[in-house]
Length: 491
Ligand code: SAM
Ligand code: SF4
Image (cartoon, rainbow, N blue to C red; front, side):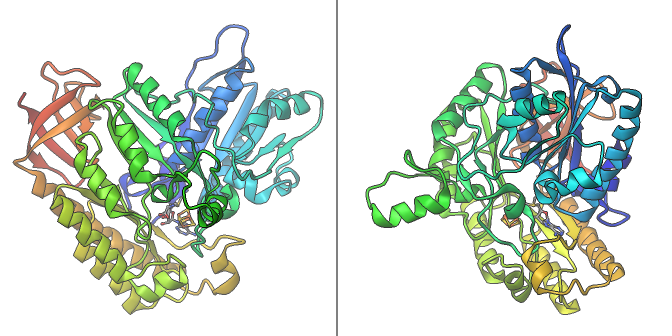
């Protein structure tokens, strides 16, 4: 499986798994006697994993239980990612494997869900003959009907993108859960048009989910024993909800006409979720540099249970490149946001980033600007990619993908090398500190050691002592490696 993870990301030969954001997850065995068996394999970002939990919930109500073994599945869903070409190639490879399984099990139904389904639509049915269902990210309520269509001998297709679907009322079935941390989707779609990005085309317009349903989900998780929730959206700072309207573009039009319209912002949502319990940790991802407000920073500062960690993708350190990426901020703006975070938290806030090497027309000097911005910020870690042209995006239409692959890879490698140095430097700063760690599993190397995360989202490993999984431990850090802090419980 780890080979597969490396394979889908292809971000340079020496890049480790920690520096990639694309993962793969499969369902576990939960099916009871008499249920049809559903196998879901999910690729891509956390939003996709969260969507698979909605899919599992919808199908569970229709008497499907999950399995971890594709060979015994009646229904196979591949929840796909289109963000880079390599992610799509991996999905094609997996479809070939499923096709072989289907040959010995002809009744098996295969469905492609998510971004690749949305991007390719019925073309996917023509190209991949054994695919029975193609369902985009807004059509998961329709999956039982689509399966019914296939049972009747048809193909099932729904790639309709909704303007208001948020699945607010669906209680997700937690997949791959440790019973300690869970994801809560707070919005869908994206209204930004970053020129390199396929997401606005595959996930549709931005909508925010009813905050009361979000708080209810957080409360239920806490009541079940969960200790950490991550609020998910492509651009969480742009969360904007009112009772009358959850579609952001329509809400903003309404706001212009009606001055007294009551709106819940992301800072207010954070405040509401933080109120569930001081024992429930809150994280969120992804923040957009153009939208993150001082209010969000002050709300984080005010609540000890909101983790001091911000994923703030910069993409490039050069203002001209940021402009043609259509990120709508420049280098100075980004630095100003970093300065504000450091002003509010000092060094007590983890900051991570996404970086793209070799975007169209990027010169050597402009690449150096990315390295110098990294030197300024010293990110705790980053997800680093070389540019992969995506069909239909603004960049594909407007610019030539003119940086040779070997140059893209070399620039990426320089970014990765610098990031490793900075991660080590940032970790070294924590040595000697006492930190609160949420224990979420055993260390990979030894059952005698636990691992958990500190507020800055760093992995901390320490001897178990009398502590238990799911508890908070107070740990003194005495050493570190590039990716991990090592310590001992002191309380
Ligand atoms: N919404 C988030 C944001 O704006 O930062 C990011 C979402 S995207 C799923 C995750 C990351 O993939 C992006 O931040 C970007 O670095 C990378 N990415 C997106 N499109 C890409 C492309 N065409 N080539 C390479 N990397 C890409
Ligand atoms: Fe893509 Fe930009 Fe939206 Fe992020 S903010 S999902 S990079 S369009």
